[in-house]
Image (cartoon, rainbow, N blue to C red; front, side, top):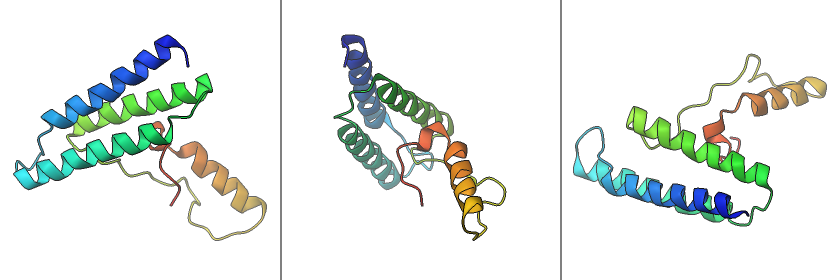
Length: 121
C-alpha cells in the first residue's frame, strides 16, 4: 500500500467515526440514534478489518469508492443502512444452465458500488 493510499484509508476511517459520533436519527428518538451509531461503528470496523489484508491497488481503490459512496448516501438520506438493490429483469426465474449463469452475471453487474462488500442473498 502506498503512502497516499494509506492516508486516504485512514482519513476515511476517522471520518466514519466522526460521523458516527455526531449522528442523529431521523426520528429524533435517542434509542434509535444509539442503535444507528452502534451500527455505523460496527459496520465500519468489520469492513475495514475484512479488507485489511488487501494489497492490490485496484481492489483498494474500489473499497475506497464504496466507502465514500456509502458515506454520501447515508448523509444524504439520513439513513446509515444500505439501500435496497433491485434485480434486473428475469432475475427471479429458476432456470438452469446458460440462462442461470447469465442471470447471475447480470445480478453481479447490476450490484451498485455501495453494496459491493455485502454477500449475495
